[in-house]
Structure formats: C-alpha cells, structure tokens
Length: 618
Image: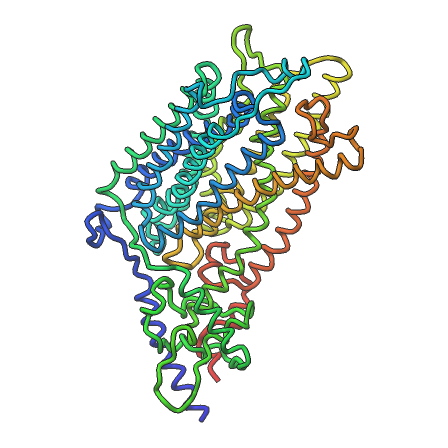
C-alpha cells in the first residue's frame, strides 16, 4: 500500500511539473489581437509611452487636488474644516475607484482600453471644472472670507445647482483618474517578462522610472500649473489640467503599435469565491496530513476552471496559514468518477492564491496611516503656508500649494541616483533585483514618515508662537523639512508597495492588485477626515483649546494644529511597529513566488519542510 501511494504521488508530481512549464508562458497580444513579438513589442520603449501618460495625468490631477482647498474656500466659500474634508474625500474617492478600474481591466476591457475610455471621462471633468470656474453664474457671489469675518458677516456658501455642477465635475475627474491610475502602472509593467532575469531587472528599473515620471508631473503641477491658477485664475488653471490630460492620452495612443497587451481573463472574483464556498461546504471534513494529497497537486481538474490563476500548484510552497481553506481541495471518494462542481472542489493553486490575497491585507493596512499623513501635507500644511511670509523676492510670492513641489525637486535627482548607484550596489549583497526587498523598502519609508510629522509639529508651534506672541510672520521655507522628509519616505513606501503587490503570484490580476495599493491612499484620506472630525469633537467638549477644538476655527493662529501633528506622529510610530509585526508574519512562510519578491526572506527550514520533493513522500 505504501509503495502504491508513493507511485501515485510521483505521477502527480510529474503532471504538476508539466503544468508548471505551461503556466510560465506569458500570453500577450499585439494591437491586432495576435501573439506579440518579443523583438517588436514590449520593453522600455513601449513603457515610455505609458510613462508619458502617467506624467501628464498626474500633472493634471495634482494641479487640481493640491490647490483645490484654496478654490473651495475662496470661491465656493466652504469653511476650513469642511473644505479640508472635501479635498480628502475627493482624493480618497479617486484611489477607491482604482478598484473599479483594476477589476474592469483584468476581467473585461484590458489595461489599454480601460485607460483610453476613462481617460476621456477624466478629461471631461477637467473641462467642466474650467467652465464652472469661468462662469460667474455657476459660482456664489465673490466674497473675501477674512473681511467678511472682521465685519461679522459670512460669505454665501455654494449650494443647489452651483454645488451640484462643482461636485459632478469633481467626481467625473475622480472616476476617470481612479480607473486610469492602476492601469498605468500595470500596463507599463506588463511590457516586461518577469520570467527573464534581464527583463526582471528592467522591471525594477521601470518601477523607479514610474515614480520619476510621477515626480516630474507633480513638480510641474505644483510650480507652473499652480502659478497659473494663482495668477491667471482657476478657470485657466483647470483648462491647463485638461490640456495636460489630452497630451497624456495622445502619448498613450502613440504607443499602440509597440504594446504587449494582456487579454482580460473574465471575472477575477469567481475563482476566489469558489474557494470560500467550497471551504464552507466542506468545513466538517478533515484535511489530509500530506498537502500533496489535496486536489490540484494531481491536476485532475481542467485548468479552464481557473483561467484567472494561471500559475501552477507546483510553483508554490505550502503554507499552514488559513489552513481551513485547504478543505476546498478535499476530493470526495464516493467510488464513482462523478466530476465535482468547481464550487465544491478547487485546486491547490486557487487556494494558495487566495491565501496570498489574505496574507497581504495586513501589509496593505499598515500603509493607511502613512497616507493619512500625506493628506495633511495637501490640506493643513497648505493653509499653514498661507499664514506665513510667501515672499521670495520683492515681486515674486511662492504659492502655498507649491510647497509640495519641494520633495519632488529633490526626488527627480534622488530617484535616478537610487536606481543607478544604490540598486546595483545593494544587489551585490542581497541578490535581489531591486537592491532591497519591497518589504524592507516599505518599512524604511514608514519609519521616516514619523519624523515628517515631528518636524511639522515643531515648526507649527514655532510659527504659531511667533504670530501670537511676537506678531511676527515666519518665512514659508521654515516648513520645508516636513515636505522633504515625507518625499523621501514616499519614494521608499509607495514604490515598494506597488512593486510588492505587482510581483505577487496572482497572474491575470496585476491591475487589480495595483489598484489595491491605491486603496491605501483612499483609506488614508478618509481616515484623515474622520480624525479631523473626531479630534474637533473631543477637544471642543474637553475645552482643551478654548472651546473650539484643535481645528475648530478658520484661523490657524487660534487652532492647535501643532497638537494634531503630534498626534499623527504618535500614530505613525505605532503604525511602524505594527508593520514590523505583520511583515515578519508574512515573511515567515509565504508562497515561493512571493518570497522572491521579498528577497528570499522565507526561512530555509520552512522551505525544506514544505517543499514537494521525494523526501516528503511517505
């Protein structure tokens, strides 16, 4: 009996290895739907057109998002706290809608068509914003908030049809940008074959190049475009954003002949749902002690039931995490050859990929507080700068929203140096294509973020004390350290997170997984809105700031923004400790393909214990 079981398992292993070779084929098509040619399609040449779209798109959306708080306060006449929430909710929605774009791309449209369709949706939103900002009848009457407050009056807030037009335009931009963002990263990365060692190194370079394109777009938006908005009006500024988006779409279409296009897979959620349903239906069954006895190692179920998950079971390490899901692979021995429904019997491949999805959730969640800090730099820090001396020369004043260009000025120098010198140097010691693993890169970025808020708190206290006690106005450049530190932090965290998620072994879901990383931004900005409201309610009821709350007034000289920054610094450090725990938990026994993304961080003893080889056959 023992010999017969050994023989069966050897046969199953051979079948899985054959499937492995098939699973490694990277199916991509050209623009006519024919198999792509490696000599003509893909590579950095094709990715450059996508990088063009990314640079122009971020240029347009950043010019709107980063100066939006000024527009809603000065021209739509919303209060400071409400305006901050409008901005954070808008940006949060952009990133939340990335899930829609990722799902539509992987399931039905493909990355190229998703970007093209929703790129025009975003363009229409920019145009509508420009029209509203230009026509007086679509805005409330002009009013100076400071003068009105001094006279005991209130500016008329935008309501009714005027408010409706504003929010329709704003959320057209959110819908378009949200659906375009994950596909830009995924489609650019799809131009490289990760199975090739040379292409894998170029893929790492692409992720750094994508952040460089992002930094260039942000820099131009926060300098040139914000300057246009400040001096030529928001209508012209929104119009320039529309022009930038149009240029991005032209760049996208220009690369059509060179793209490697991954075809959509059908609903990407069906195989995931099948695992949970099958595991629940077989919850009372007992899993075999040997993971090779689970269905799927034998490859008895045709692969057409799991087309989304095209990797084979043999390319994974078995993991004891979420072992209850293994019950979905238990094949019923009823003495007949009756084929079980895919909703009752799943393969090891399906189960292990669902385990990967569940395992990366804590990593994703650990970056939410990081993006809550980003929200402050785009809202309260802009208002903080508006309360300072913005004069650079006698005739030139720095727009407060342009403060956010400071880290990007640094990054357009640092990112190329990082990729050119640090990555090859670190690669010699770690053996990792990216120099250091994405998880380590994320962790270092989260650690730096804490110091950004510490710098912000110290400088806000200094600014407030000078204004209240000495009637002095400090130079706006005093608050540059918080932007510089966070910019460096974002270079590590943002790029590391995107690379980490894209390289997970979930083929056919790259756009959706990239979208998941953007959800971290979304939840971070929503958490920012929640924190602002919560802090106001708690501090106003406790009377810690004279009854108005830390952020209850429209005057930062009366508010206690410094205390709010200290609160965020504490949350950021606790979040970093939380991340250390979960990254260690994830690294303990991930899938083999995932461990390659981590830089071989899986302990060798775990590998030897779970490896499917002859020594483990009973």
